Image 1 (cartoon, rainbow, N blue to C red):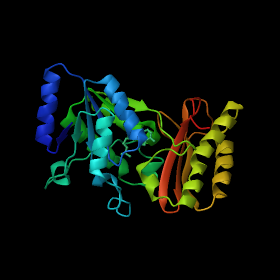
Image 2 (image 1 turned 135 degrees about the horizontal axis):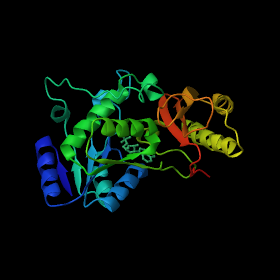
Image 3 (image 1 turned 60 degrees about the vertical axis):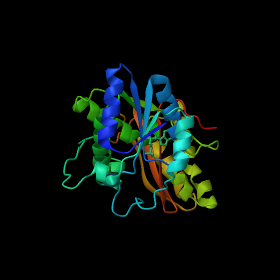
Image 4 (image 1 turned 180 degrees about the vertical axis):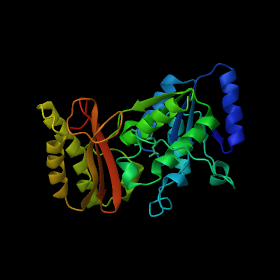
Length: 286
Ligand code: AMP
């Protein structure tokens, strides 16, 4: 396992791999690994000759009152887990490497970032798109793997890659869940035992929405009324958003005619959790 800390070393390493005909598979992360991250690494192992995992808690995607400083970190634990999942390289750059003095260039994906997390977290997707563009230029991957748990992020990155003619494939992987349905997230460690119980309202809402859809319901408002009514009755929760959107435009829709996604962001205590369900897909919740 190779640990690389500088941009120059990362670029040289990847260039050499590419020149020798090796396929570079990349998994960008903010670390503090759980099984969701590891599922992306295992997929990368299947699809590439060399698996590069980046660990970087990117300050430009956090708002001023968000959890940048307290975001959980444990490099030694992550290193071991990544190695066991088949990673060859951990790219672990410093803030000075990523955003040196005089840094001033940002990527704005205009439309698909407007709704949902774009409304609640101004500047978030500008930070995400920028750091991913930079990481792609550093790691030079043939493919990069993202989780569908961050659905709007995946749509944003796919849009950026298409619009800027970036020469790599973007792969989306299903959400890995705890046994009781809670989507795995590095932020779940913030939850108290009572909040952990309340957090199940997200996955239970997805299941409920799927059931309504499977029974033939196509009215977005009726599905959302049911879901918000349910979540509002769960202790310690506050809905940030509950919306049904087109998976192409990420705009709200009234009827579930084309491909659509229900996206939820709910504060449980002070922890903001997200989850989503693409209508018509399988849902791995008991
Ligand atoms: P993060 O470290 O939270 O930035 O996440 C790094 C990558 O892991 C992103 O592509 C996420 O979408 C993905 N990811 C996070 N949680 C999960 C999960 N529960 N299942 C699958 N992928 C996930």
